[in-house]
Image 1 (cartoon, rainbow, N blue to C red):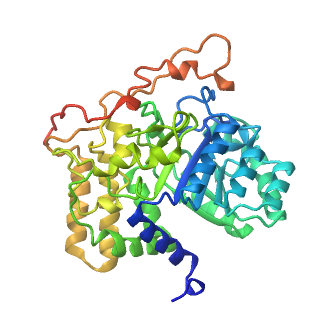
Image 2: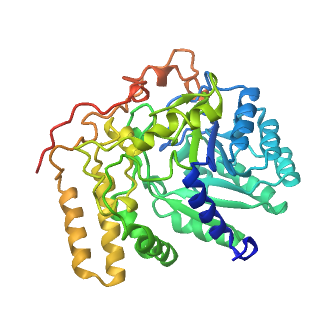
Length: 430
């Protein structure tokens, strides 16, 4: 088979498979800024001020160094990438490096000038996140009026220029009942639409974003009532989940093998939400970080109290070392929300295969988790949520992005300091 015979997905899978052997950094995500013009109820960003973020020159240097090391796919994200006035310069530089570029945006700041730039130098893909289909819903989910009107105009600008736009959404409680409408809206425009129901904790340890989570039953209901979504899950389940074997290692994904993340402050990480083994790119090169401390996370073993490492469903679960840190403070922690979703989803898929006994076993486990059971010895989510905002600085600047209130929240930097798991918490064993 020649390269001409391969589909894009087959080519990508081959690249990742072969590149993983040599640990090539093929796929990167780059948060250009934490600044954002919205205040979404589920957002994981604790500080929108943009303090200590990298300069244009620093970003361009790192992009060049990543390209030199073999990076092919690059995601530019935020925050909101268009909050940076130098976005056009950064974007054109990234294009010159030869990346297959994807852009994540909320779409509210995209105007004719940016649309024309993207039309002249098209990205590989553009994704807008929808937070409703009306200005009223946007007010509820993002805190600002009139934003859907802006997004709708941006969508038209993309369509007029035949740019590779797709739409997505977070299936959280404030959008309950609107996901199906968003899907129909996207289909009518000829645009691909996808959604995810997973909402993570905030980077500073606050669990406030999780207040808007859909219930595990609702999450799996989305899978059950959407035939295309169900079939995709079933295909993934048969190919990647059924062959799962226990592992002694903490990591089981591609983070640090062929993918990486760069924060707005210039920290190179194996994963966006995993503040372990980070490397300061302001003090050294991408190559030094990638082939140095960042890769060491792959050799770290799971703790004895990590009940997820040997789980036969771990490849189906959204709980990973990163999400575990966000909710429990430990990369080895256990999260009942994800455990329940995973077992309910697996039960649904086993029903689809015709394995009634296995489905019943998984469903019984999910019900047990829902009732309050937890594994003995596991580190559990925090009993006290760090969700209460601190007082504003008094200058009326919180809404415009001052991060002083966020930065003074209780224990704001605790997660960034984690290098080893805390002492084992006693499980309830219920």
